[in-house]
Image 1 (tube, helix red, strand yellow):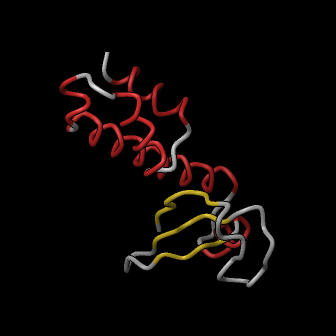
Image 2: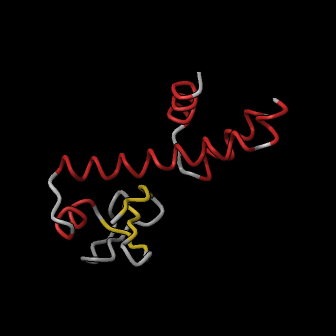
Length: 111
């Protein structure tokens, strides 16, 4: 199981059916099927304690940061130093990353 991220766009858990949640976590099972689950259902379904759950969320987020960074470095904007801020915003939105995290990641790993 992999946690792909949190979204406020889907507010219903597809496991228990609870609606009007603040949001759900997109999870991918071993078959590649994506489910939108509330945090309690993820913990129960995969027998995770709170720390393990947070670690899974962080792991998925860090994978998205790495993918965004790789795509950014492969871009023409990065190579030519033109419109870099626009490309950063595009990737931040694509990978659902917070602005401060993408820039922090980039600085921390590319100095």
